[in-house]
Every structure is written in structure tokens, then in C-alpha cells.
Image (cartoon, rainbow, N blue to C red):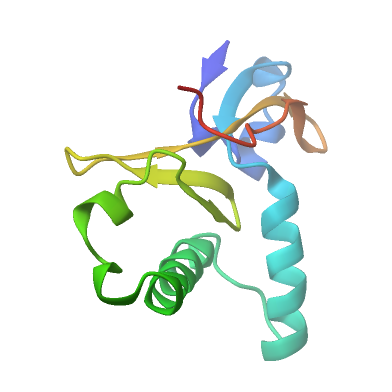
Length: 124
């Protein structure tokens, strides 16, 4: 069986009929590290989507620091090499969509297990 990133969920992991199923999702190690830093700083658990906001702010700051007056030019924002984020590689496409480098995960009773890691770069 194949699923989406929505399968990265304790209810799915507890379902006997979905055991062994595969789904695409961010490698969980990035979020675990982020959550640990968040817990230390704020004393609570971050929501899963907190990494999206963190990556957005980090990207804006990095572009402002490194790209000067062209920091938000379309060719800078749509760099085909993409950007590294908490949940892995991502890039913006000229048509307004985004693309992410995801891991292939297998459903297990203890959670998702990476069977193929996320890419370190976007292919040509």
C-alpha cells in the first residue's frame, strides 16, 4: 500500500491493516532536532507545521544577508538548487508551486521508519 505524508500519524501506525505500507514524508530527524531545541527554549512541544514558519523566516533572513538588492528577485527565489530547511530540501518553481525532497517511510507499530532517505540535492 502507498500513502501520503498524512500517514505520519500515530493512528496509522496503530492500524494493523496499514503495517508495512509506504508513504513519502520529511525525514523525521530534522523535526526531532528542531523539537528538542524548541522544548529547551520554550518549555513545550512545537506543532508539526512550526518548521514551515521557521524555514520561511530563516530563508528570508539568509537571502537578505547574502543577496543584497536582488534578494527576492524571481531568479533568486526559483533557484533550481533549492534551499535546505528543517524538513529537508525544498525549492520554489516558476509556476508558483513548491517541490520538496522527501524520504520514503514504512509504517511500523512504533512509528514511521525511513527506508530511503531524502535527497541531498535536486536532480537535473
